[in-house]
Image 1 (spheres, rainbow, N blue to C red):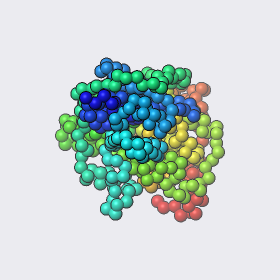
Image 2: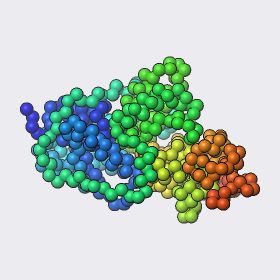
Image 3: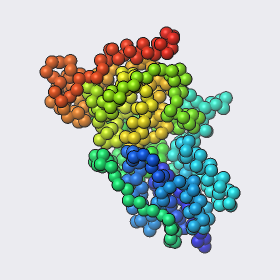
Image 4: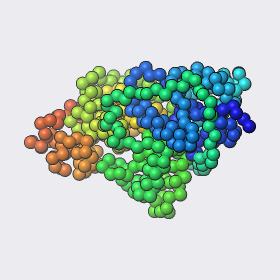
Length: 468
């Protein structure tokens, strides 16, 4: 019998099923020691931190029902994990790979250190359909355009079937000195998030099953309407690994509906494919959140407008759809995808505020914050990415509101000052005298004037050679 424990190092994989590292460790028959290393914070907690910590607590509770649990440490994993290996005399260490720049560096360093001291280290793919370096064009180069990337990814074949949860668990019973079950103090602003989220692997699976049964069939037609429950709501669970893309692919591909739902299935899976694409771009461009992929945008003279930035953050721009989205984000940690695009476009093009400031705010406030998707989507909205909406395509927030929230139901939910305004006037309450409530602001910028300013700024950067 092997009494030396096998360490499973958890990061973004709080699940039992389709967890390659956990399955491989369990197959060794060694007692399992599940470890989570919380990094020391140099700044305040983000909404994503909050969601991860709540998820960790739920996963630990699930493991305790099986006789185990998660041992939580705080510090630098590059230093702590080797120390833990020595303390408990671990036979091997297992983890699922990360693809962000810091995670890549830590993983590579640990593998070198473990190899030098003779400790087995095994890492696995677990968070994507395809690992970031695997989908290339015929010349062996990474794709810059999503449609070509996704076509090649689909031609590579379906993802492997998801792994079942291990049938039996044997947990390490020895002491793990130095583990700190730190009691976190939640900031006051997190109190509003609780009403909008549930946690746990079973919850994620239930949400997937409900989406497939009730919403998948009309996903393609209704996903852009923020007042409708037509999206999957799986992004926070995917981010912390309570569910995997392979599990989602499997459920969606097996969904009933036949050809009638084929287009909806294809559209939804392509949205998951965009997530893979974002990670492939981040893999090639580690500074994706700080540098425009299109170099000409580094010379664009962004405006220094602290009051405008603050009005945008707090949902006080005077444009109801933008304000509803920003308030939804602050109160719930999520924002409907269509509204994310409108709000991001407003910051960058109406206010001419650097997209990086918006990316940073979303990184702080999104419960489903994903460093690859967030950066790539901001560059898409700003027109700075390789595969982006052009800068001169400027979303009109009023027209977007009338098209995608025609009754104003979404606006009324998040901007209660406008609850008594008519369906006709709610999208632009300043246009009808007496319509705008006194406690709701006038627009901080005129759409037509802002559009002209943005285009003129872009023309100066491009030397008047704008392509359309």
